Image (cartoon, rainbow, N blue to C red; front, side, top):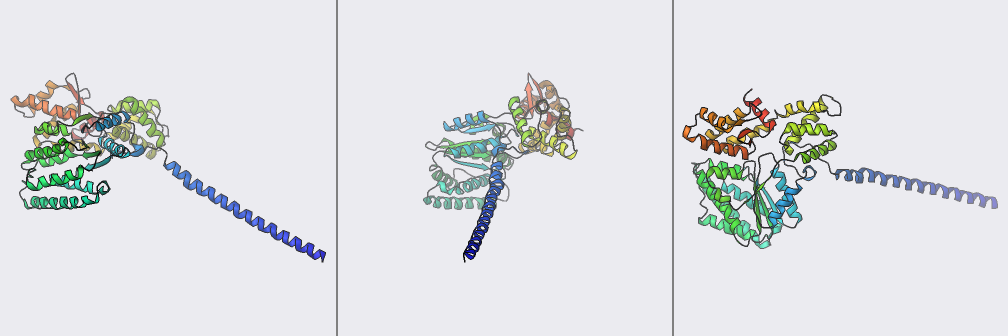
Length: 446
């Protein structure tokens, strides 16, 4: 009996040990599962949140791809807070769109209502207004419910104006900004804007739209009237909206060419330049580290030197060619100074550089585009550039009337310098970008 009890006790103890061992194995399994989830999820999320810069060529950048520009952002924000409207004046590829998108984000972070609108794809003034209204409508949480009727009225007015445009089959559409419908349109828009309090509205690529308008019948009159209409919003007291304009074609260049500078004389010209050599070096160092292709100080210096004009776009483009060579040709992971020149040659035939030619056709008359290309053809033949007197002689050879040569040279050289094609020093003009000069010569003259 006692033996049985002892045996029974032993059985119970044995069963208890087995149960404890099972509990322990389940516990260990649970702990390992939690650790695995932490490793694969939380650590992964942490890595994705690390600051990494991608090798992005051409498109506007944001987030960790946006580098530096601290001083420019601080100055722009200070100007906006003090009630200024800005005209971001800079050549293409400098990074204007990326900068203003960051401004929008910063404004939103300061509890401003901020809106970014790109009007590059619009054909006329009504298209601009419709896109503007749609942008506001997407932010309906900015407005009281009672403003739904305002949006309905705006849609009805725009539909009526668009029908008038479609009925005009001769291409001479003219929007009279002081007629009843457009006056009502402005009234309804102001009804919305007055409720926005502190707000920022960024209009990108307005000059492209204006160039389309200007090339149509009655184009100059239409463009001027539309610019006056936009200016009237900026002149009204009581509105706390700040406006920022930018684009790949200079709005200042367009208004000068059209003789309507007064329509934008209330805008504060905000210049944006290339990186300084120091910032360009820091940019390249970070780009190499984040893309597993470290660049030594000597290599970075060679890239900046050959680039000549260290725009983020050009630095990204040249780096992409270095990275491609090391991937495709199986070169050493260590980039040498000797690798940079071949990468420059490949970057100088990149198709994206063709937009510099296309923009001349878009923004100029056929005759002025021909003359501007003639000047650039001549200057692409040598790196050191040429004196203005030689360029004037060249315009004569391009059949510009003698009495018009000086005025035409002033007009074209000023535009080409402002838009980033040329750089002038002591009366000598040369390509601002060695990459663009090489591309231009290779594409047009070889």
